[in-house]
Length: 340
Image (cartoon, rainbow, N blue to C red; front, side, top):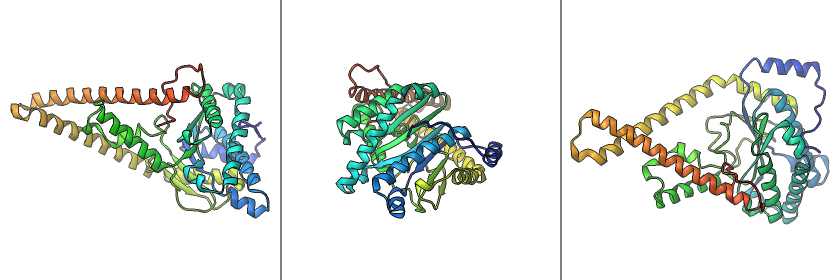
């Protein structure tokens, strides 16, 4: 099945529901835990491989629904690092399915470019086979400049804890190398070191199968998101479940925005306090007046911003170069947030 299948004709009721939903705030970025493929296979007495295949088909269908609604970004949990603990047979099946679907994606380059869909893969892909790594690199690189329509982030060989741990390691290396100072480290800077550093904020996170946990997915990114737990197996997820989740988001939109605004205000306050205290430590022995302190704080803030920009630029270039090495002769791509 194609990643961008031909659009199905919508019923008058679906068109009406979409029109009504679009009168309210529609989430720009949805994250989905596509849970229930194995239970669906048991329920339907089919092979697990067929259950996972139908799960992918549902993903392609859901992407079409999201595009119709005007969503700009979708992030899906395709394969957790924890999934490597499953049986050898099932892991091999999932890897083979990933190869088949990536091969199909690469065959549809013209279609992907036509619709200007950007594909990102977030996770520790060095855990995968060389063949799969190269296919991922090819898919990411050829679509990296597509931003007009939508972005699809596929979390593969991923867990949120691993992501956060890698971000902390990068910050520690930056301090050790003298690129940034210990006082520069904030939750905002850590956020820029995550795999999802170039993604929009997650507005709505959906989990299917009736489970009410996040399973180590987008833990940082979903801190100020609306959560929707849907009591249906992923292959049985319908457009009506999506409509209901978006309506749930709209009902809670005001509270989410207030929480985000309060977070941003607190971040700014903490940053100002940090800059002020750092300056005081540096010039306290000079007994400066308030005007001198204010001027010094402004200079320190500008220097800090410059240090951080240079650090992040180097980090993104390193990640991009690691990706490019998988495809000989590829074009320089400094802004790919894929590897740690």
